[in-house]
Image (cartoon, rainbow, N blue to C red; front, side, top):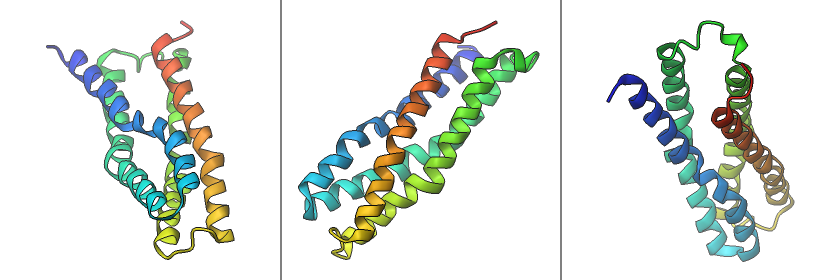
Length: 155
């Protein structure tokens, strides 16, 4: 196995392991809201654990393997001619910023509020609304990255 194949395998595996589970949050979040109580707390804790153990580590691994791939495949030459690549990187950076600054802290806050028995409070509702707003945005950004990386439109 050559280096490019190994890096590509690591990069694709990282995307699947790190970002695949995030697609389930669109189902798990509303389910937690519907169930309420201890069941909702369990779902929210599971979502927070997935974020910490799978998604956040990939935020580091993906850029590393991606950078090595860029140089190993020679895409650093004429980098800005490969707009699918730099656009994917910009979209990834935006998704990471939204995840780390807004989404992950909001999920953690939901867990804390639920543990304190404040599941029906206005603060809980506002925090849940934030996750309902930015969760779909993250999903759309990830789909854009997938489409760009797979189709590689342009020269």
